Length: 264
Image (cartoon, rainbow, N blue to C red; front, side):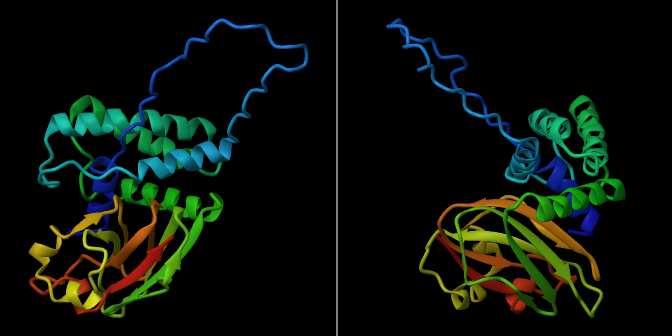
């Protein structure tokens, strides 16, 4: 992961979103007696605009990148990602408040271009990284989701709670590196729910990936900066870790940047 911009760009265009298909369409109503006067079933209230915006941003963060090398994505895959994310992004823009709409509109342009050309935004496009960071910050402050603020230093993650409620969660990463290092937060669910942090630290990184399920999305931040992500966590036991490394050195998680959280 060469840079914060590259990581966040891939989050948008690689971990775009899968649109949840509307199952079944309209449902035919069976014939029956007419309801008594005044007994008509009340229609469900429409979601508030803010709720709709937040729900779509949560979905945007929820889909993993496609398989393959993120540095050279397949054009067909890029077009598919963009085609999937655009309906959610369009919906988010339609209900977004004025302070958020320009940020999302910027991302609309990026995704529409990708849907047409099959080419992802360049990894050094700061406008993409900034736009993603801006909407993550807005969601953290306005969506009313459970909040977790993690502070990264060398080599530890502070602020990871021992327990969380299941459901939508907004994560903010604050990088207070004193060594000019990039840090990230990734959430994984061990396939063996009894595995310990000590066992994780003893597992070679190339094998660890086979032993966990990665929660889509990642919060990334350069030194002195912050990043964020939205996740919808089912009950279970998770590890919060930094997957980045320094040159040829081990990943930061192997140097202590890993913490455990129980979600119920």
